[in-house]
Every structure is written in C-alpha cells, then in structure tokens.
Image 1 (cartoon, rainbow, N blue to C red):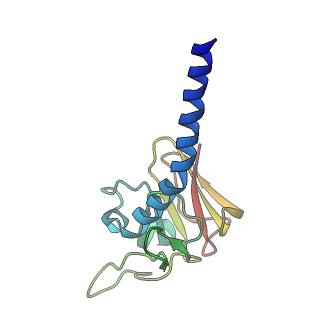
Image 2 (cartoon, helix red, strand yellow):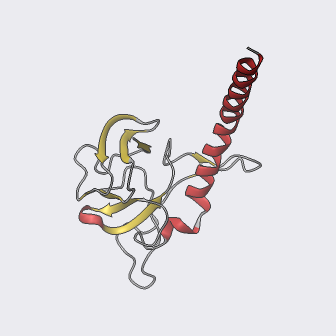
Length: 159
C-alpha cells in the first residue's frame, strides 16, 4: 500500500511540474517564432515546418513558423520583454523586393506548406484559433487557401 501511495505521489508531482512548465514552454515558442534565425531561412532548410506565403502557389515572400501562434499581430515573448510583436513576412530581394516583403502576416497569407511529418497545421480566420480554417495534413501544401486567403489571424499544430 505504501508503494502505491508513493508511486501515486510521484505521478501527481510530475503532473504538477509539467503543468507549471507549460506556460513557459509557450512563451519560449513565441520567442522562437519572433527571434529565431529559422523564420527567414529557406523554407526547405528551416527547422520550422510551417511556411506561409504572401501569394498563391507558394509564391512571394514567406514566413516560417515553428510553434502555434494565438494572434499574428500580438505575439508576446514574455520574460522581461513587455513588447507586443507583429509577425511579418521576411524581407527578401534587396534590389527587387519579393511581393509581400516586410508586410504583416495577419490577413495577408494566400498559401502555405506543412512540412511536418506528423502534425496537421491549422490556419484560422480569427485570433485565438477561432473561426473558419484551412487544414494542411502532414506533408501537405495548399496552393490557395480556401477559407482564410488574406484573412488569417492564428495558427496551431494539431494531431
């Protein structure tokens, strides 16, 4: 009986630790989505597996995303940085900028690619993972969003 109680106590303690850690893991994801060098690497070389594109057919400027984003226009990275960050497409093509370079991501993405081997990528019409959505299965791309083309505000990974 004591072993069972001891084992149960260990499980409860582990669950409490994982719940306490979860918010900081999201904050770290937010920081990675904003500050990482992966956001503007060539999509096929980036460790971030969602690629949103300014134009249909995976054209124009892009933005790589690694972690779920509650609101493309209000990303808080936490810690001592109170700044609210706005996600933007990468600025590409110095002398001849790619369409969408430097534009806000929110309400401007027309297509996307999900290079994750396991998870589905859901791009939502509204912030907070709400409203109409386009879903890309593992390894799938959408040449033109059907429900959220140029009206997209959040994204999350689902199984």
